Length: 379
Ligand code: GMT
Image (cartoon, rainbow, N blue to C red):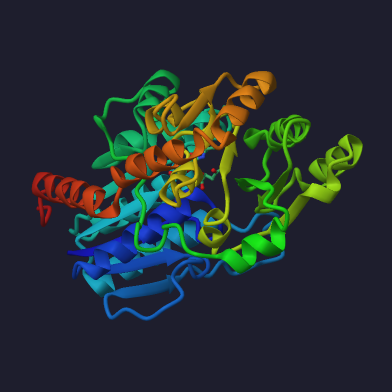
């Protein structure tokens, strides 16, 4: 198949899933064309089946806001025609689904049909998408897609409750490359970061408010009252300064390390004992899945798709959003030497259920179903 993929190319769950999906499809022999404004972060190697087409947005003094969506739609038309793509898969509804719709209509006016699949990832529905500034366009472009997927049951339900959707939405969960995300021996790193055998707690995110990184720091502060531990914070974003100030206030700065945006996050996970993800909203929780694949148990909030991913009491614990006390108690249970090995084993076993080898065929079947439904060419 010749597949076009549109996504946000920078750090962020939806871009990571889109890129990993494209890579996995290319390894199976499909030709995959990424169409984005910059090279996707994880697309940093050569594969004869992978292609990248940049979207240029020319600036003009009149434009206070350069019209990215129009430039994207134009580039989609060009690439779909030049490369004779079979289908277009857009990740994150805003503005990708509406740009895809526009491209589809342009091609239709020239007698071509391109099936469009939209994958909903989370904040495109739960935060930004339902804002009145975007809602009509999001509803319309989801309904106009030939196929729609969501990354969890919860996101599917949220989409139906926030928008008037007439389309079937198929749930296809996030997946993991277990060849890359596995516990590696990193003794030198562990020794450097936890010389006295301190327990290592980790959190990775884009430090947006929705991630409640503040709760991570508070839970860590409580854990430290009971045992020696270090906190590793991976990622960066708008809340970073606030979090540094909170560490100062709580007097825990010496034991908190801000590692910034790291590509090889699996190396940090490989030395970690516990992952914290206390988000306000989290449609799936790819970061938690990555941790589990590296045998790191997880304490999560009970929001969105997290309860679908977690096995409460086995892979870690699911706690109410903002319940710092419960998270602390459960974290101490997980970290106890008697329990930790069993939590680690369950985390890995659960992650294996989301192996890319299992999820990729679900996407391929979905593509085939949508292609079969499409009528080509239009008369
Ligand atoms: O987690 C983020 O804030 C980034 C965001 C994105 O769209 O790039 O991630 C969303 O998509 C991921 C991949 O499907 C999911 O695993 C995340 O749970 C989801 N984030 C939220 O719902 C907040």
